[in-house]
Image (cartoon, rainbow, N blue to C red; front, side, top):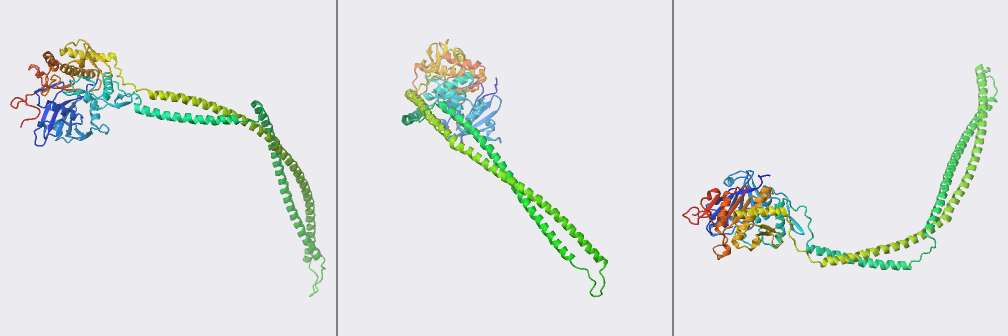
Length: 614
């Protein structure tokens, strides 16, 4: 159990320009502010409400004129002190981590928190965090869940003098019908510690009807469209006249056989094509080879021509006679004779080379002739292969492909006919579905919304709270408190005391039982370590009539209840705070056992009221 969670109020101060501060201290445990009417007790209550997040400013009284600064000191059970400051008619508060006495002079940072819960920094989150409550959800209605905010706790535990006497359930603090489910779920959370984070809301009635009408419009459109499509398809079916007599399986078999034959023909065609390309490649090879040989032949003939030219030159030189020198009549020298002999050897070499070339030309001519014959043979083969190739191709195109296409057309006709029937059957099913859906939607639209039902309260847990309430009432001498049970009816959601509804008692007794219920709830949550609050504030639980109100018997509270009430709190060991404002005064032997502040209403005796006298 974490006893450090929660906070209690330590001090309230109200200030104004040229005004003495009005202030009052509080302690943990029981606090009683007692005194006659019109001394500021209810004003203090409204100030506490204002500083804890209520939007409305404290109701002005003559003594409060000129006071517009409000300070609230709080202290956590972990020992940390904070001061909450708010000006009159402000929508935000300023918080400093210090006591009220240190607030003005402290250099600690001031944080601004807004009342608007949609703002990132808001007062609700700050106070919930101090109480150990983080991201909890409540059920607002069948169609909505909301975050738990501090305002729900404040309304439940700051109980005004007019609220404490109402006939409504203490768990319905706003008297608004739309809030009943919300506060039912808050009680479930407080009894169990489990919130509604996993709750899946239903649709709101307006949204539900709008959605159903939209769905009905869509369904009607689909019924109309499908009906038109069915009429069109039925007409097509009646006009459809298939031209085939064969069975679909027979056609599929024929198609398979033809595909097999055509496949074989394509293989043969492919083989012929490859052979054809190979022969063409071979012919190209021999053709290029012949061209190269013809070129070589030209080179040989050119070489032979040159040798013949040289040979003729040698013959002409050989016909020249050797004579003596015409000048000196001298004979030819021996070296000149040698040159002639060399010329004779050159001629022999030329003749030898010419003979070799002639032989090569003969071989080359033979090879060329052989290759040309090979080219002719290959060409003939190419022509034959080309004829075979085109015969296969024509057989495929002109004989088998038309047969296969005819079978495919027949199969397509069958499939179209089958598809038409299937579409009609499918649309028939879809139309029947939408007709049924239309009836279902019309029934749903006609249904009346179901009323809100109370949240299910676990019997064992509510029994524990009933025991808490019964024990408190007994100690307060509440009459006929031997039996306390809980009526979880949506409108009631309240306790029945000894067979009599709590709301059926008079105002005075309702105020006492109201206080007992809330005190028991805070005590229960504190013992069970369920994060809630550790500060309960009730205005006038023992004084249920006021000056302008005519006192009747139903306002009366037995004196034994008053005595037992004060005696209970004088001896009650509490680890949370209870602040009570009332006109009733406890016996003097009890007042030193708790924080007791008395407003006398008389300037000459004690403290006259909340505001200081001039």
